[in-house]
Length: 122
Length: 110
Image 1 (cartoon, one colour):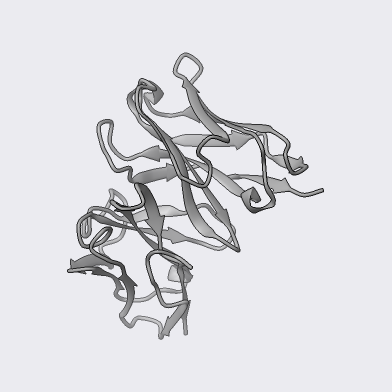
Image 2 (cartoon, each protein chain N blue to C red):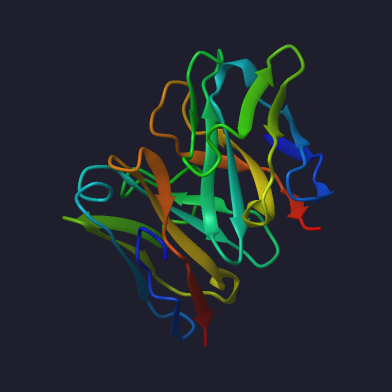
């Protein structure tokens, strides 16, 4: 069974930084592209970033480009999102999501974690 | 304001059929596949339909998807109480270079 478990969320001040992690199990992590998707009442569901299986291809939404960095460690079956220069409108539940196919673009999110809440507030 | 437009809510009676619409443009739905996600209360989204009309393994065949031009639809037949959820359409947008979502449709089963 595919399992994705996010961690690292919390309360951070505007301008601050936070690193999210996603621990994957139940599938060959190194074979699948991975993604971050966030959800807030104000902005709804919003794709944040994607990374290919080998980390060769990386994509970001314009809203986070230059502030967020996606990465992965295939030896640890883990996905990361380093967030910096955080703003109030980054407040959201952040989901880690697996791509449906090992060689697929654009992504189809076939498995999701339970999410981790990031709150940006002074 | 979401790039893809969905009705905020729909309702239909138990065991009936309902459709949820998703309207976009030539840069997204008109040129790319549509995916649908179901989000039960308090849960993460779940892939329901992909590539316009394909069902992932394990998804009931009461769910179906279709697309015509720059619009897509999700149909749910034989409505059950457990179908009460938020439903989101999604597609790649060639102009924005991003995955875009609809604002979501809350389904109430009467």
